[in-house]
Image (cartoon, rainbow, N blue to C red):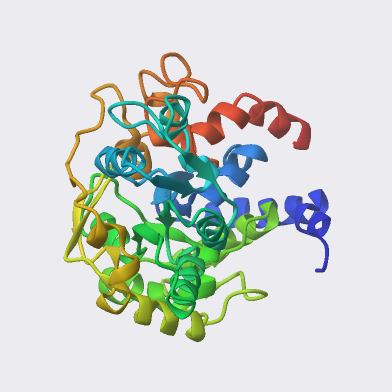
Length: 374
């Protein structure tokens, strides 16, 4: 396959659905599969995939949305940094509307803070060069997928000795939240649709622990409809055969060892925090990535006395339960009423990878699409 349309071919999709339906009849009981990445969630909702599958296969959402897992306290810390004299705060566009206790970054910008969204952390270095009298802080978020671009930026800042630039690191790793779920979280999961983008860096080997420690099957998948359907089929084959392994559906991009050069760079620039707070999962050990001592000169948490407050989510917000697959978005009492993309209460309604945003945007049409396909 060379073109995107080939990964959306309805004839091939029908064949895969027929195979999945036939294999589902061989299951001893219904199974619950967690799509780890929010990118998968959006594809599932956009194309009505969950309604094309047999009732014995339940797809639930995982903690793989990098914006969604950031707790409110860290957003408050970013707001505090933006309010400091002489600071320009930069970040990706999807962080601009994430609510903190005193509003979002977008609202803080309306109040007069110099906050800018960028397409790459390297853009922040350019802003620093153009504003030598200001201190530019990049508010970094993301799993191992986006962490290498931050690492390259930090290495460039060091090589060029840029004095007025730093990073507020909120990068996280994928293994700890999956261990928390597999170790008896509130959601019982039978198998995982693995995150293809993260796996391009960490490799399929990063998910071996789910098989070895928990006997849970994994299929690392791409992000087109046929990718996900094939991944579901691979998982069913494992259930039927009784064999547990990590299948690589996304072999056109992902290798078992991932990107070794990128991982070496991450080891140089970052170090694991003893603990880091996650929305919906609490504090997890060795799950956040801090900037290493060799790069302390460009670490915002080293330069500034960041408050580091822990702030509970709003009582009405159930993002945590959505992120761990315990409920579906529409089961949250404020979904689509008090909480919408225009007036978000939680992060899952803000992020382009958030499950609530996915269902809000696509959930109303997926059943109609399903009827047309059938």
